[in-house]
Length: 293
Picture 1 (tube, helix red, strand yellow):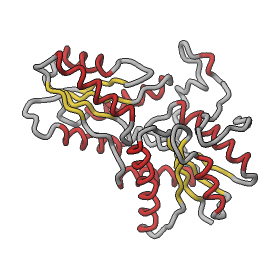
Picture 2: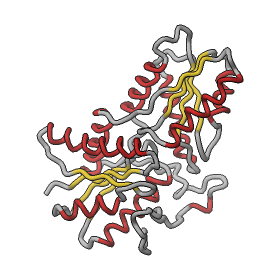
Picture 3: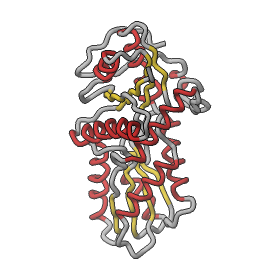
C-alpha cells in the first residue's frame, strides 16, 4: 500500500485560513490522481483549529494505512516544524502501535515560492508608474534560523528582478516590525512600497500586516504603500507539497541543521540545545505524556 500523505498545518482562528488549508489538501490529492498515481491525503492542525492532527492520522489508519509521510505545511524551519510537529507525530505513533511516519521538510525557501510571491507583488503594483521597493513580511519566530530564511527569501526575490530594493520585516516575535521595515524603506529613498505578505493563507497575522501598513501610511502622505495578497491555494504549492512527499519517500531529506538552535549553541539561546520537544495543546486533542525523543 502506497504510504499516505499527512499534511501538518499550524492552525488559525480565521475560517478563511482553514478553508484554504482544506482546499490545498484536496488539491494535492487531485493532482496525484490526475497524474495517474492516486494518493490518500489527509490534513490536520497542531493547534487552534479543527481538525486536529490526531483526526487526520486516525482517518488514514482507518483506511488501512500503517505507513505515512508527514509534510509540515510551513514556509520555513522554525519551532513548529522542528519540534511541535515531530512531537505530535511521536504521540500519534504511540496511539497507533505499528504505525511508521517519515517526516518531510518545510516548503521553503524554494524558487516556486519566490515566483508566486513575485506574481502577487506584480498584481499589487500593476498600475504603479514609479520604481518601487518591496518589504517582505514574514510571521516572525524566536528561532533565528527561520528569520534568516525570510531574509534570504527577500534577497533572492530581489536578484534578477527590477525592484528598487527589498527589505525584510516580521509581524510577531522578531524585529524589525512592519512599521520599522516601512520606515527603513522610506529612509532609503523609496517613494512606493509593496508589502509582500509571505504567508500561505489568509489569517489573523496576514490581516495584522495589512492593518499595520495602513496605520503607517497616513503619517507619510507622499509614500505610496500597496499590500500584496498571500500565496494562497494553488497548483504550484500543491506540486511543492508533492515534491516534499517524494523526497521523504526516497530518503532525500536536505534539512538545514547547521544553524539549528536545538543543535548549536547560538548567542542567548544555548539553553535550547537538546531541549525536549512537546506537542502543542490542541483544543480538540487532550495530550497524553509521551516521550517525543
